[in-house]
Image (cartoon, rainbow, N blue to C red):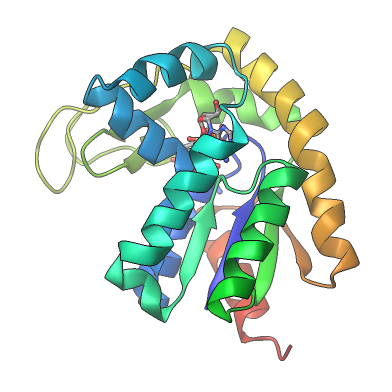
Length: 217
Ligand code: AP5
Ligand code: ZN
């Protein structure tokens, strides 16, 4: 399986992608997670990216394209396929991805956009908790951890992302509609695009994803 999960901040990409990874034995490549890893390690790239992410804007195409390219080449789990989460976010990134896959003799199977109204996203974003080391995602109300503020698997503390506040979300949504909206059109033209109602519960969204992946090409 080679697929892309698109959608606005809080649509459920990071909730569904690990399930796709486990079900289809593919790699899960999330550019936002990779950037947060750089921030945690306090690299120069991380310091630069943090400012941009907290402003709700996009880091440059070259940075994220380089990270994806590197993973596709060296991450053995990607041999079976991949689920991309948060990439591509601009037409230029989509074109670079096409070139990368062409040179590998690989093709995308599908692009799935998680569709949801902006006003439903504020509660998802402000209630989100993450386990930074694994990227596991919870929600104070909708997907609470078994023990308050602790990761189910490791028992380590959960945190809030620094871009998960109402003001930065507003900017992230503007960026999404302006820069990432056209990417959906790019894949519609190629006949790869599928839309799924992401306002449903995680298990209903998961069932509908399954229908897309099982559909004949
Ligand atoms: P990124 O980390 O990709 O953030 P995002 O796109 O804003 O998406 P989120 O992670 O906020 O949402 P999600 O869809 O994963 O939602 P989740 O499943 O967690 O990027 C961060 C930043 O990095 C960007 O702003 C940019 O600066 C930079 N960046 C990243 N990639 C880049 C690129 N390619 N180019 C340039 N810059 C890039 O769910 C949210 C919450 O809702 C959770 O609490 C969850 O439990 C809950 N939830 C999920 N599904 C449901 C449901 N069905 N019902 C109820 N609650 C639900
Ligand atoms: Zn995410």
